[in-house]
Each structure stands twice: as structure tokens, then as C-alpha cells.
View (cartoon, rainbow, N blue to C red):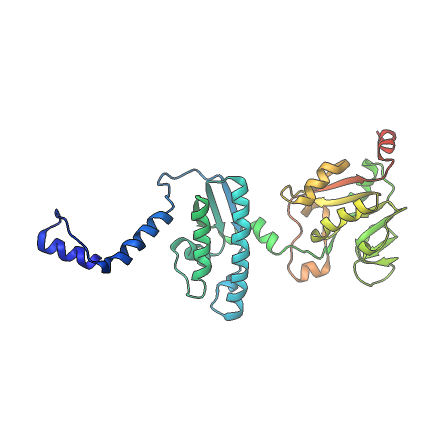
Length: 310
């Protein structure tokens, strides 16, 4: 089709009409399909409504088969996850900050190795489909504290509440705790405790498979176990305190806020939590943000106890 147009313009000029032969029909149909599938983009720059900060390891961007495969999986998952958040939030403009200059360049310029071009296209197609604008910039690693902390978060729970803070919390909330769950012999806060692994002095292993009835436990679980802990409390109507970080976007945090009968803000995590030996050796981080103590009471006589307490 382009060849026929150029030939007609050369022979009769641009202000003329022409009859194309049948060989141009596929090209014409291709253009029609492209125009139908076209998603208009806004030329006016919208002020950013949400900021996403990432911490991407540079090693995942290197052209090695194993690392590229890992990065592909992460990128596909993140693209889907982020698209759901943006869709539910009705965001029109997204600012992305990353401490990986290579990743910033690849996404901004759409220039990447052939092994990753498919995944980068998926990111751009997702943005186009949602009709949002993005502004991606490089964030120096020294300033990327929160994302860096979350990427190296200690999910094993190798930290504990400082004993002084724990005692003050019990006094302020008028609690006489009996047992410490999800601890080990080197970080238990109470003489009776259940350990996550076999060690010394624990009364049981794997608290989730033990009964919590007739106990008033102190529960400071690893971050991934919060949903399981709340489910356990629902199944065994008990009274317990749960120590958890202030993470409003997590479903388990919403349940803690809505279902607790008493709560107390302790302080920032780096001020009241003591890191364990393995956490320090592996260069892992404490949960960022403030730490709260929630009193959960699922007992049938909850209303009667609440009246006595207050």
C-alpha cells in the first residue's frame, strides 16, 4: 500500500485520488485493526497520585539464565499485583522510585535484552490498559530505607521485645501473661514458652498445632504467621495479646484494629526490638514502622469481662 501511494504521489502529486489494487487490502485491514485497538493517551501531565518505591537487586538484571528466569517470575507477579492495586485505587498517575539505575533505564527507554523484552512489554501494556501515566526516577540506595528494609526483612522473627518495654506494657494494660508463644530459648519473655524449633526449656514446639485454651498468651509471631494466628484465635475463643507492626495495608492488620478490645502503641521498632544473632549475621532488618500491642478477646464472656476491665 505504501509503495502504491508513493508511486501515485510521484506521478500525479499529492492532491490527487488513486485506485489501489487488491494487494493493498491486507495492509488496509491491518491499519483498521490497529486504529480500533488504539488506546488514546493523555498529553497533559497529571500530578502524581501514588508513589511506588521498589528495591530491585542488580543481580536479577544480569544476563544469566537462572537469574533472568527469577526476574521474569518476579516481574510477571509484580505486574499483576500492581495492576490490581492500581485498578482498585482508581489511580491515574503513578510515580515509581527505584534504586536500580539499570531497571529505571530499561523501563523508561524500553531498551532491554531480548530475554526480558516480553516482560517489559507486559508492564507497558498493563499501564496502557489501565490508562495511567508513570514517572519513573532513580532513587539513591542510601535514601531507599523502607523498601530496602522490606526486601531484607527478617521473616523468621529473630528478634524480641525489650524486657523493660514488655514489663511496662503488661503494667499499662493490666495483664498477667502466662505463656510466650513463637519464641525460642534465647528470646523468650516468659518462663513458659513454646518454641518454633527444638531447643531448650520449651514446653512444646509449633504453637499453631497446640491448644491455647486456659492460657493468656503473649503472641509476637513472625510476620507471615499473623493470618494463621488470627485464625487460631477465632477457632479457639481465647484472650491473648498480639504484638504487631503498624502496617495498615495488610489484611491481618485490619482485623487486629477492628477486633481488638484494647490497643497500645509501644514505639518505633528500632527503639524497642532487640535483633537476634542470626538477624545480624545475615544482615536482615527489623520490621519497619511503629509497633503496637493488641488485646484480643474472643471468649464467650467477652462483654462481661470488658465491663469489669473498664
